Length: 330
Image (tube, helix red, strand yellow):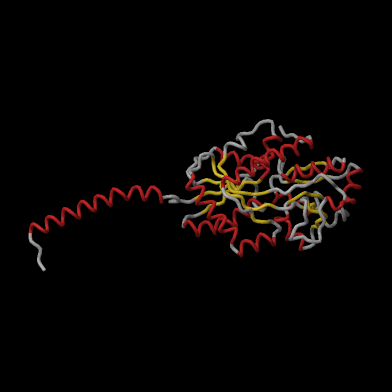
């Protein structure tokens, strides 16, 4: 069938109008769907080998599979996690820089430090919690400390120290809470992350730590470290035979620190929602749940607004614990 010149001109005009309308709509669709169009960085504010680093590297390949962009884990350690945390606080809120947050720099540091290069409650966008955990009282198996009562007895001699992942970390504050509860003074030795602490704990340079179970479970299984108690109000599912501190007679230490994903303040709501949904889907997957359970941590399920409210309450709760301990850092 041949077209007349008049019909041909009319069809051409119709196609031109349709194409113009389609092209005009394209930028709107592309603008909405461009993120992410280049690699995303997740900052871990501690040295490699610690819990934040392990969780970041567990998330990264799975987020990469979901978004089709490289997810780079960048360690920016120092100052009890405050250096990496401050870096993200000052980053552009465009969805390409996130913080694998630990509760220390977010809910403890504001009370512990006289000055900070960021505002814990205001300079971040709550994206998604990841996990919380009972911390453990861990000792070197050759330390001669076989119970919490042994720890208290050794502390009374004035010749006992505990290591932490850094000043102002939950490991530090839980140790100070233990000092308050037992009316002792165990000397604090800060490290630049759980990785370096773990090396000295296994090597016997430091005998005791109030640590996250995630980085130490392998050494416990290998027989290099022993867990004497957990710091939460209930026993850990990963360590059902280990008593709580309260069960050993030490009252007033109920601490269960957490980890989560934050962005800089002002992160667009659609990016926040997409990242939250992606993270929560990952945490709900059977393989990740099994990995977390084997390491003694439990996934947390919250929307961004719920997570923000949770952090706000935790800032008050941990702040009170810091004040009660009397701990300060210049």
